[in-house]
Amino acid sequence: MSDYEIYISQNVAILVDGNNIERSIDGAFNMSGGMINFDTLIPRLIGDRALNRLIYFREGKNISSKLAERLHQQYHGSVAPCHKSADIPLSIKATQLAAKVDCIIILSGDADYIELVRHLKSEGVRVEIAAVVETTAKILQEEAEYFHAITPEDVFTYNAPRKTSKKTRKKKTN
View (cartoon, rainbow, N blue to C red):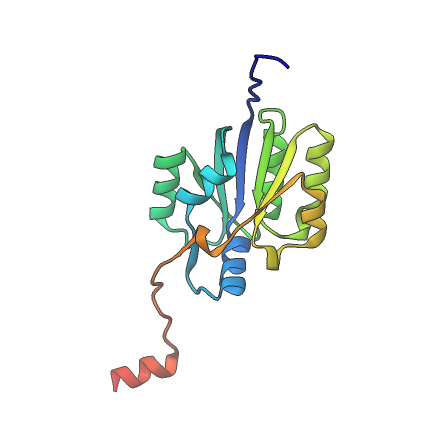
């Protein structure tokens, strides 16, 4: 038995498919307006490893400036608006980061990432998936080197403004 302790250092990037995770939370946990609580989830995902970067990919222009500011202040993270889905921008960024990090954690349960996971692993990058179990493709869970289940404890809700229908607006103006 050796008296030496082995310390394994890993540099980690977290890439979030925001639309996928938000839909998963809404569907699986029945939480309209549910969002990831990064303050509880990130420490659990990272453990003793070093966070290299965090990027939150989101389709559309309605991206919370509070989220972007919080990710930047707390994790030196950023928000990347996407023209359509996050699949392609997230995949491109993952392949660019492959030579710079030891591990990439993808927050998404979308089976579209299966070829990306396989490619990253072939490049020697550890790939972990963090997602809601009920909405994650089984093949993605199996292909990842580790799966982190996102639970209701990793989520908070905010009071999203309610959308009013045209009928409701007309009634209010009469």
